[in-house]
Image (tube, rainbow, N blue to C red):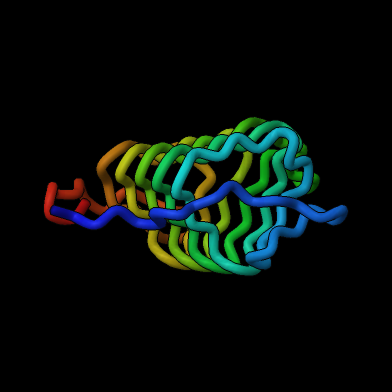
Length: 137
Protein backbone atom coordinates (compact mmCIF):
# COMPACT_ATOMS: atom_id res chain seq x y z
CA UNK A 1 0.00 0.00 0.00
CA UNK A 2 1.30 3.44 -0.94
CA UNK A 3 2.21 5.55 2.10
CA UNK A 4 0.35 8.84 2.26
CA UNK A 5 2.40 12.04 2.36
CA UNK A 6 2.10 14.27 5.39
CA UNK A 7 0.04 12.10 7.75
CA UNK A 8 0.13 14.96 10.31
CA UNK A 9 -0.35 17.84 7.87
CA UNK A 10 -1.78 21.05 9.30
CA UNK A 11 -2.88 24.23 7.49
CA UNK A 12 -0.45 27.14 7.72
CA UNK A 13 -0.67 30.05 10.09
CA UNK A 14 0.34 33.54 9.01
CA UNK A 15 2.10 36.24 10.97
CA UNK A 16 1.29 39.95 10.59
CA UNK A 17 3.43 40.10 7.42
CA UNK A 18 1.80 37.06 5.77
CA UNK A 19 4.79 34.80 6.50
CA UNK A 20 4.34 31.14 7.47
CA UNK A 21 6.54 29.09 9.82
CA UNK A 22 7.88 27.35 6.69
CA UNK A 23 9.28 30.59 5.22
CA UNK A 24 6.79 31.13 2.40
CA UNK A 25 4.44 34.06 2.34
CA UNK A 26 1.03 35.07 1.08
CA UNK A 27 -0.31 38.59 0.75
CA UNK A 28 -4.12 38.77 1.02
CA UNK A 29 -4.16 35.27 2.56
CA UNK A 30 -7.87 35.74 3.28
CA UNK A 31 -8.31 35.07 -0.49
CA UNK A 32 -6.19 31.89 -0.42
CA UNK A 33 -8.09 28.59 -0.52
CA UNK A 34 -5.77 25.78 0.42
CA UNK A 35 -6.49 22.04 0.15
CA UNK A 36 -4.91 19.43 2.39
CA UNK A 37 -1.41 17.97 2.16
CA UNK A 38 -0.21 20.96 0.14
CA UNK A 39 3.58 21.32 0.11
CA UNK A 40 4.86 24.85 -0.56
CA UNK A 41 8.61 25.40 -0.66
CA UNK A 42 10.51 28.04 1.27
CA UNK A 43 10.76 31.55 -0.16
CA UNK A 44 7.66 31.13 -2.33
CA UNK A 45 5.53 34.28 -2.69
CA UNK A 46 1.77 34.21 -3.29
CA UNK A 47 -0.27 37.32 -4.06
CA UNK A 48 -3.89 36.24 -3.58
CA UNK A 49 -5.52 39.66 -4.02
CA UNK A 50 -7.88 38.28 -6.70
CA UNK A 51 -7.96 34.72 -5.36
CA UNK A 52 -5.67 31.72 -5.38
CA UNK A 53 -7.02 28.18 -5.02
CA UNK A 54 -4.60 25.34 -4.39
CA UNK A 55 -6.26 21.92 -4.32
CA UNK A 56 -5.26 18.80 -2.34
CA UNK A 57 -1.83 17.20 -2.74
CA UNK A 58 -0.28 20.06 -4.75
CA UNK A 59 3.49 20.54 -4.56
CA UNK A 60 5.09 23.95 -5.17
CA UNK A 61 8.87 24.17 -5.26
CA UNK A 62 10.91 26.77 -3.44
CA UNK A 63 11.26 30.33 -4.71
CA UNK A 64 8.07 30.25 -6.83
CA UNK A 65 5.80 33.26 -7.37
CA UNK A 66 2.02 33.19 -7.90
CA UNK A 67 0.50 36.53 -8.90
CA UNK A 68 -3.27 37.05 -9.07
CA UNK A 69 -2.51 40.65 -10.04
CA UNK A 70 0.22 42.15 -12.22
CA UNK A 71 1.09 45.83 -11.87
CA UNK A 72 3.17 45.78 -15.07
CA UNK A 73 0.37 44.96 -17.53
CA UNK A 74 -2.61 45.48 -15.18
CA UNK A 75 -3.85 41.92 -15.61
CA UNK A 76 -5.72 40.34 -12.75
CA UNK A 77 -7.59 37.12 -12.13
CA UNK A 78 -7.76 34.08 -9.90
CA UNK A 79 -5.17 31.31 -10.04
CA UNK A 80 -6.16 27.67 -9.66
CA UNK A 81 -3.67 24.85 -9.10
CA UNK A 82 -5.67 21.64 -9.42
CA UNK A 83 -5.28 18.43 -7.47
CA UNK A 84 -1.88 16.72 -7.48
CA UNK A 85 -0.18 19.20 -9.82
CA UNK A 86 3.48 20.03 -9.26
CA UNK A 87 5.18 23.35 -9.88
CA UNK A 88 8.97 23.26 -10.21
CA UNK A 89 11.29 25.54 -8.25
CA UNK A 90 11.68 29.17 -9.34
CA UNK A 91 8.55 29.08 -11.52
CA UNK A 92 6.15 32.02 -11.96
CA UNK A 93 2.36 31.77 -12.42
CA UNK A 94 0.58 34.85 -13.75
CA UNK A 95 -3.00 36.10 -13.17
CA UNK A 96 -5.96 34.07 -14.41
CA UNK A 97 -4.02 30.82 -14.95
CA UNK A 98 -5.29 27.31 -14.18
CA UNK A 99 -2.86 24.40 -14.00
CA UNK A 100 -4.65 21.07 -14.52
CA UNK A 101 -4.88 18.03 -12.31
CA UNK A 102 -1.74 15.81 -12.19
CA UNK A 103 0.21 18.27 -14.35
CA UNK A 104 3.94 18.84 -13.88
CA UNK A 105 5.45 22.25 -14.62
CA UNK A 106 9.23 22.17 -14.94
CA UNK A 107 11.59 24.36 -12.93
CA UNK A 108 12.11 28.00 -13.91
CA UNK A 109 8.96 28.11 -16.05
CA UNK A 110 6.86 31.21 -16.78
CA UNK A 111 3.18 30.17 -16.86
CA UNK A 112 0.98 32.83 -18.47
CA UNK A 113 -1.70 30.56 -20.04
CA UNK A 114 -3.71 27.59 -18.78
CA UNK A 115 -1.96 24.21 -18.76
CA UNK A 116 -4.26 21.18 -19.28
CA UNK A 117 -4.53 18.18 -16.96
CA UNK A 118 -2.13 15.24 -17.14
CA UNK A 119 0.61 17.01 -19.07
CA UNK A 120 4.25 18.00 -18.70
CA UNK A 121 4.98 21.65 -19.47
CA UNK A 122 8.03 23.88 -19.12
CA UNK A 123 9.77 26.90 -20.55
CA UNK A 124 9.49 30.64 -20.94
CA UNK A 125 6.66 30.85 -21.68
CA UNK A 126 5.59 27.39 -20.49
CA UNK A 127 4.42 25.07 -23.27
CA UNK A 128 3.02 21.54 -23.09
CA UNK A 129 5.73 19.04 -24.02
CA UNK A 130 3.77 15.80 -23.73
CA UNK A 131 0.92 13.95 -22.10
CA UNK A 132 1.85 12.16 -18.88
CA UNK A 133 1.40 8.40 -18.50
CA UNK A 134 -0.10 6.85 -15.37
CA UNK A 135 3.44 5.89 -14.33
CA UNK A 136 4.57 9.55 -14.62
CA UNK A 137 1.78 10.67 -12.32
